[in-house]
Length: 274
Length: 260
Image (cartoon, rainbow over all chains, first blue to last red; front, top):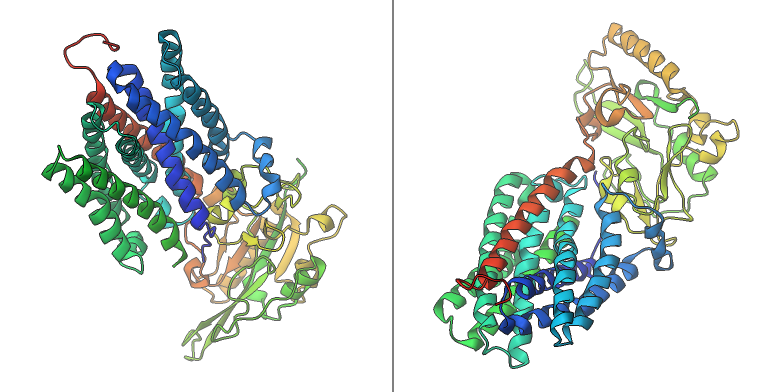
């Protein structure tokens, strides 16, 4: 009988927040580098969002260890083929990028902005890594449901993007920056990643076949179909289609995307216990 | 590296006395556990953080030539794989290979991330809530470094568990399979003896009287790390698609320069 690692709520939160942090950062960096000056609000929101989230990620990871005081032991080794080892290093390195980018995003000087853009281009790679490696980590296990499709990394990345963009959208909405043109661009990008996420989910379930049972047929099935596919993906896509100009609907869609991102991590981690 | 040591468990000789299970508990000072009712002689049901040797009691109704119930008995243990998923997964380096080829967990280094638990193809490694660390058979690391065999092998009264140099034990095991086949056990086979086979061979290997799945062993266990390259590449592809989507959304159309 295979054993599961009993990763529970702390790791669900970590996967969820790490996805948002990575997604928000790379969205910010792309907006910063390739968008207009008017997209600066998007970049700033993304950078400033990723900093506290990645901090929370580090704390969650440490708290979940069997012996939290030994968390620095992760730094005893660097195994480039091991997602857990790389991930521990990446959280630290990415954390530093979010700190520097956040501080630099507070300045309006053009010189600082130029430096920030360059840093963003490098930090972005760690953002992509943080959003996706958690999925690769799961597929690197002996448990068929996690490992057989080999698509967990790709799926988590798409979800990290959609939740990261949704989080920026919400921040803009709540801080009164929703009127800018960045809003429409964010919505466009979010739709794009949600469609990819939906497509990857379908391929994943098909590839897994019988191994997808814990997701599609068991105790967690209603949450998977209703919470993730329905509330988390289809409803926000429909909302965006129905009222693309209504800011409140857009904000509601963003909340639902975040709920969906959480449900994805929750069902993938918790259904393995069943 | 010193010559590789191994344990050869010949299930055809096992009488289910559980001396190995008890000797393991006593030598390694593994604490008491509440037994669980499994509906048969099987106890405990699975490896735990306090059960490193476990006798499997497999009932085969009608398994004997005269139609009677047949017992398959097997003393199971950590396989000390030559390509060990747990060892590859361990981010702290707490799981290491000894000079004898066995796999051990340094309890002073393990920080309890539990990645090894999900990386074992046999469900051996278990998390211990009290110590906050991962636990498994140590191959009696203290004993083999002092010229003694593992406690389970020492206690086995029938020679079902044999300890020695791997190359010698493999030869012995191959002969034993031939003998058993000659006696009519047509499904007698070795599990994990072939160092060119799955997981690079097991340093605790077995002689089985039926196919591996009868003993709840995977027929062809795979290294969990086999997925890392493909999954990473697909994740990168996903990153490209997503990044391109964000880029297309934010790009300033028709204005040429990126910072227009």
